[in-house]
Image (cartoon, rainbow, N blue to C red):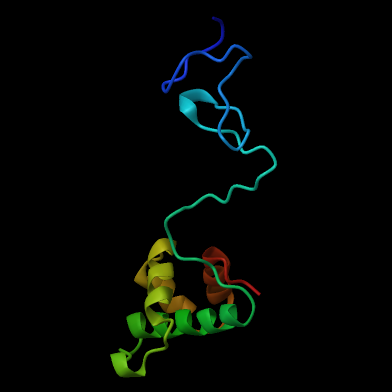
Length: 119
């Protein structure tokens, strides 16, 4: 017999092992995607689109104000408050930078750009 050995049986006489969907097995048994689209899954907060992006931008401003200006009581927070807070955590900005982004201007634009929320 010739060809690589499969973990689940004898070597394939016609070459590399194939996955049930027809794609060839790669190194370590991984399959190549062929014409399929692979969407990488990465930890983090999803960036919204459209109308929800506007709502997320407002929630980010609310969280920034909460952190550097005045506490927003839980019952008054936007439904996206926690997600916006998590998004800000990913950005890694310090309080001094967030303080500058609390007001409309270049710092806020830079923050939205860093968060993937620019217009």
